[in-house]
Length: 150
Image 1 (spheres, rainbow, N blue to C red):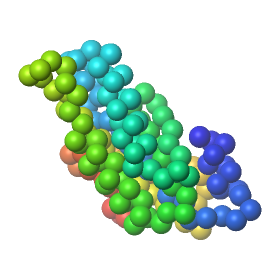
Image 2 (cartoon, one colour; image 1 turned 90 degrees about the vertical axis):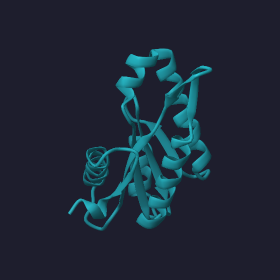
Image 3 (cartoon, rainbow, N blue to C red; image 1 turned 90 degrees about the horizontal axis):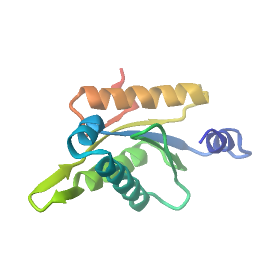
Image 4 (cartoon, rainbow, N blue to C red; image 1 turned 45 degrees about the vertical axis):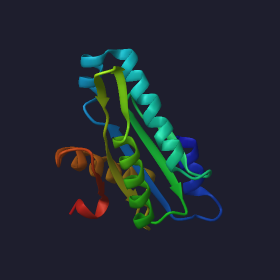
């Protein structure tokens, strides 16, 4: 991820760049309630939902156990928020069946930020991380962009 971010950051022609950070809501509870194999299935299904919502030149990375980071090239903040909402909605539709009568609910919280002229990589990642934290603090299963950080 650092190599891709550096290439986008220091490339010959800097392009608009937005970053999404997403976290599977209540993932520890999923593992504790349904078991680690089911938790692994949730991660795989969230990754597949990501793949379905991204363009060929967008890049997604596993960023910790149940977190993902997505680099969206040539995407301003408004477009990144639309992509994040698309991901959130697609994941919300996942209902992984454990038994015929029992489904594993799955939602994600997402933070969104875009590079500005004052940014270095750490400040951009810091903003998207704070936006993700705010999404979780505000109740989960939602998208928060950097404009709400205040």
